[in-house]
Image (cartoon, rainbow, N blue to C red; front, side, top):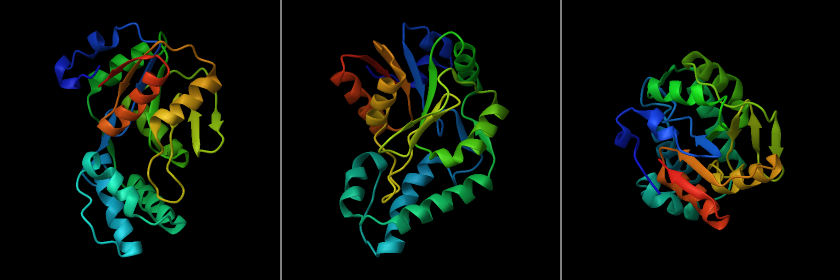
Amino acid sequence: MRHRLSDYDHKFRELLEGDYDLILVDIDGVIMTPSQYLCSSQWYVSYLPEAASYLHKIDYLFGSYLNNFDLYTSYIKPSNELATKITQDLYHCFTATEFKSVDQNLIDALSDLSDKKLVLGLTGRVHSFHDMTASWLNNLGMEFTDNHGDMKIEGYNSQLTSGIIYVGHDEKTALPHDKGKVLDRFIEKMNLNVRKILFIDDFAKNLDHVQQFCDQNQIEFVGI
């Protein structure tokens, strides 16, 4: 089942009142966003092919994240140099900008719920950005459920810290890992019995990945 945040006209408490065992929330573009377009999640997915072209002399049209994400993965040549450059550029971009809330009502509703239900962040950011991420979230008053400590997933550079799952990026391409596959590993490691998930993300591709995981495991899915 899919909805849009606009369907609720900022009445997010109504949205969150369902019988969810797990509420997952993307951070960039959902909880917070840079004060300018530069460094935003929309900017990042546009920047990826530009960096690839710079390093590999690839000349093709990337188009939108939704329609041509597979095109990017097909044409790009794996390179640790690429991943390192993109991560460094993104780090410098993040440290030089200020973030604001996308909608403070959503932050307030999620934070109030975090001590009653399991509310976790599920972000494509790498874990090395945790300190600055936590600082900005704290400034905005966003609280996640933090009762599982720190966890790492072998085979991925993914980590759970302070209630946030940092999905991380592929070390060769700098593309975010599949959120559904990473979530699968964390739910197993946390020994959770999940029957219904609400996931809020600003990219349909991420919603698709988590829904695929839910469908494969007979979990009811609600995507926003």
